[in-house]
Amino acid sequence: MMLSRTFPACRRLLLAAALLLPLPASAHRGWMLPSATVLSGDNSWVTVDAAVSNDLFYFEHVPMGLEGLAITAPDGSRMEAENLARGHYRSTFDIQLKQPGTYRVAVAGDGLMASWRENGQPRRWRGTREAFAREVPAKAEGLRVTLGQRRVEFFATRGKPTDRALQPLNVGLELVPVTHPNDLVAGEPAQFRLLLDGKPAAGLEVSVIAGGRRYRDAEQEMTLKTDPAGLVEVKWQGPGMYWLNASVRDGNSGLPNVERNASYAATLEVLP
Amino acid sequence: MRILPILAAAGLTAAPAAAAELKLTLEIPRLEVAEYHRPYLAIWVERPDQQAAATLAVWYDMGQRNAEGEKWLKDIRQWWRRAGREMRMPVDGVSGATRAPGRHGLTFDAAKGPLSDLPPGSYTLVVEAAREVGGRELLRLPFQWPPAAAQSAQAQGNSELGAVSLDLRP
Image (tube, rainbow over all chains, first blue to last red; front, side, top):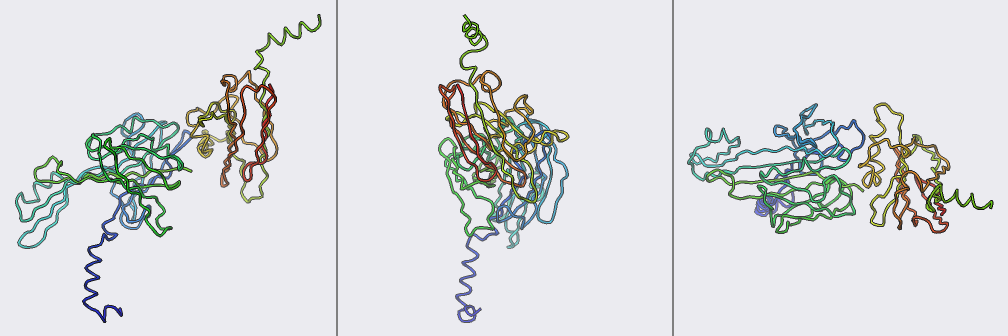
């Protein structure tokens, strides 16, 4: 207050600087948080929270939509979630692990975002490929269109880890395990391969952040880079839930004059 | 003349290694806690590369309906990762009910069960205990197999396990 009254110009400058900074609003992260990832016994259930938030893993912003929820059972078949619900801060669902082995639980899909100017006014639009042709002018002042291709996932294993559900789909950005994602322990570095449209994503920046952010002062984000074969090695900071994230911006949207933003996020549990 | 049948009998019943025996004494401490559950416990043999060579015993709550007790086997965390998740419970002669606080003696015969196909070498016997609403503790005792002479090893737990001792007889 003192500062603003004495130096109004300075205050304006501070405000401008604040707007330019990567504010938390730009760090909205999509994630799923499973109740367990390593399970024993025959009657195993996993309950899952899904949300978009700044801090990991806290429900503080909006629930994640589950329209693109796709669960792959160990034998490669698709299965349905149960008890889906949308709360104020988070969505939730249950899955029953009827088969032994590894499950892949993903929320994936794509959507288009467009911005342009109409009669001097900025316009923003968001929607499906189908609605795009209908609702966005083919030619407009400053038209910029991006295809967002997103995958948010986690893995859970009942009994012995298996690989069948982990086969890449060769669409967008994906993680292929070298170290099995349900065989992670704090003292052992893990290796993963990142693929973009089925090919190794070389030189890709991968960010890994431990959960429990509220109880420490710094993000302690690990920023890693994939090698020419798309491989990345993660040295865990300790046991816990981690969020691994990467994204790529390129022109491979398959649509003329449309950029693509492919993103990937996985929640990985590291045991002591 | 009298010594002959004895020698013959010894030679016939089993190879020299067959007489070998691994004896384990372990203590489950009595804990003054409001909610006590007997620990889940696994005893297994580990190779120098930490891979499991044999699971000797797994104590868990076998009495529950629908094998509900198996839900918590993964809490014997290291055993679960090294061996348990590859096994189908229950296993005859290996699975057993949880045991009460006190000293427990177990004897494993080289001629039968999991030790019968253990190749000669250096091993570690691992005892891991995990208790519901309690902690987890793991103790390691090294040994040579088969024992050329009598061997023993001791370890002392400080939370979920008490004194553990291993005695091998050729």
